[in-house]
Length: 144
Ligand code: DQA
Image 1 (cartoon, rainbow, N blue to C red):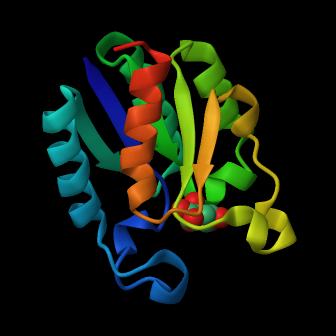
Image 2 (tube, rainbow, N blue to C red):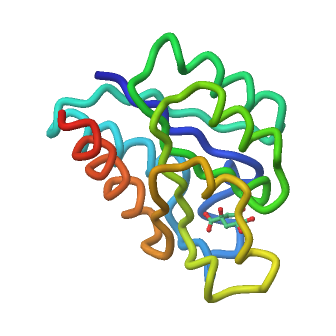
Image 3 (cartoon, rainbow, N blue to C red):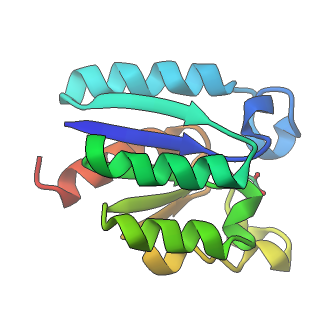
């Protein structure tokens, strides 16, 4: 089974971007962690990142053909994007919303998520480890 781990805007800068908030782990380190965990748990991992809302919508659409579920860190689009919410609702794949930081402990505008409404669950506040937790959660949800 193959899972899409999709990352939104500014996450390409992880490691150097506000390390006090997001940690020092780079996105490529996280990708390595996910691949290693996928090998241990028998999940194929496709890992990608885009700063463009439309590219994220396209990736969600394409996942319908190729993946059993999606783990999505939509970055700031979480708090703004009806288009991403609609894309997730349209493909009927289980999607887990993920954030490195505990968005509920931060600014008010980060407390609202358009995508929570169409995701099976949310993992936030556990840093890079959250990606691995999300993989286990998706596997359990799918009874794989
Ligand atoms: C984030 C939280 C968002 O509020 C923020 O805009 C991000 C990263 C996180 O992983 O903690 O870009 O999704």
